[in-house]
Length: 139
Image 1 (cartoon, helix red, strand yellow):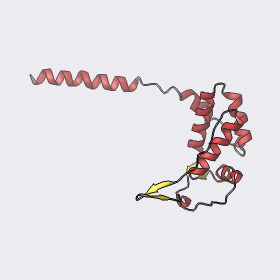
Image 2: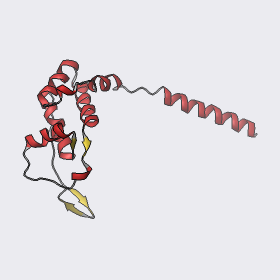
Image 3: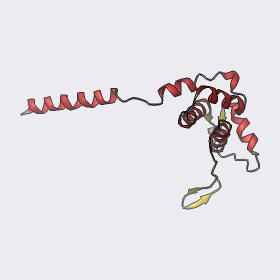
Image 4: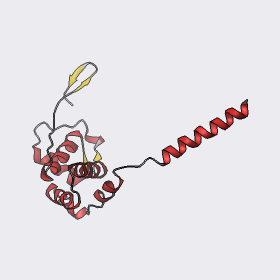
């Protein structure tokens, strides 16, 4: 009886491993091309959008390329995550992460949205509050 259980275990394990290896990332080619964006073209969102429009056709491909570039190129600025500037203008929220390669939530959202709009995609930043310990917080 234990031999049968062992054989079933091997069959199930092999099936799971095989299933995991056959999983295909449908965005792998898009991600690869998006991450080839030359550093010299990442100083402004106009340059980034131009690269996106030149290399991707569908809205889905463009939005994925913008997402993967922003997510891979901008680090979360842990040191300044509580140092919100409520008076920072929209342009500064976009240019700061391009210069420093760091940002917080509002920088990611503003940068992503600006590149989307300049690439011909609709995108909006929705601002709001978090709930911390049962109360709405300013961050």
